[in-house]
Image 1 (cartoon, helix red, strand yellow):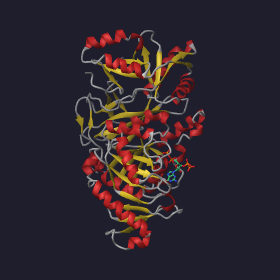
Image 2: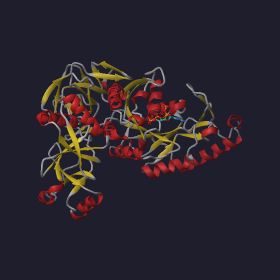
Image 3: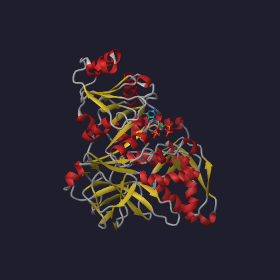
Length: 529
Ligand code: G4P
């Protein structure tokens, strides 16, 4: 098959949600439809259960599982779907942010009773940064929830996105009847209590047709007619181009656990979701159809086997064809590399692959050569953009607990932060190392892994910090003046860039107000001036 056809066949996406909205359940149902798994419950184990958050062995176990579920590939109606797993636990949010740099679209799951929740908000911001098209799936219609019109209003206002329902629920909770497919003009009936594998779909071309009253009862039929009239009056027709430009998000209603509304979602998804898109580099835009291979690393996963320190780097193929045993150029390292065992992920199996195409994710065994964001090419010196680090929210000083193992500690910190477990800053005044993370669990993870993988020990010391943000200015002198004025609040990141450590929201605000020529950045990727 020509590369162009391979690209057309691919849809690479992620599911995002606030924990408990139903992401794992929906993932599982999609895999069931794709024939990638045979039994329900297969994906469940991927979750870090709330009660287990402080149980270290549980986290380690999850790390092992999450390699297998990092990418779930399956075929559905001739389309090759790559579903990238995003950790649900908010402490691993940064992992999720980075995974979102490797997808072409997302499905956002919202619990119909809870509406927009904090994690939904954060994740959508990340999607917005990259103009990622979003499909909304409103879940748990088998339970009492918010009025669907209110819910759509809430989502539009809170997330600042425009919506267009493509299915519409008929009641909810105990009296949930099903959904009406506004596009195909069909009624899909919900069989209360029965887990459904194939839905009961009835074509209803004209809502005024009396059959609908016979099926769902006059009251519900009238409400549906009224709702549909309102929807058609209020919402513009769905325009696929607007969706692809991330200007509008189609909405589906259903109940993942009951396998209800999932098929409609998947069918629409393969029709409208984007095929691999062009991507920006610091040199030029890379079109997936480009003859030469290129890709970037968006995730690094340490292997669990303590005897081997290899890791798996997850590479998103952006253009051309990736081939096993071919020499590729590691731009940052300025050297050529060959991969004899690249792996692809089909459902929960890893297999060695001979070739991969744009949109595919390849696992590369790595002995410490890769950092998140690294680019591989066929020789061209360019770097993919849009894989930033996010300003961390929690901070601790690292204290070396075993001075004889200083070298190991430094190496461990270097490598673990390359993997993106946390960010490392060095204070200007005393060279003390500060770790910054998005979640509290990461500190435990680092301490444990330093011990087990590098034989190094560290303790953490409290540091009172609100935010670390990168700073830049068009005016070099002003930047230097700011750095010397705030020397006690300055650090450098691993790349040597200046980072301002704000002790409080107020301190940050004051610094911003008093220094209009300094720009404060909350993600690491910004134009220098
Ligand atoms: P997450 O990955 O987004 O965190 O959510 P997950 O799928 O694990 O779902 C969270 C809980 O919501 C699960 O229940 C799940 O069964 C339930 N759920 C998912 N979809 C629906 C739905 O359509 N309707 C209803 N009523 N519940 C739904 P749990 O009790 O936490 O876990 P479990 O014991 O069922 O595994």
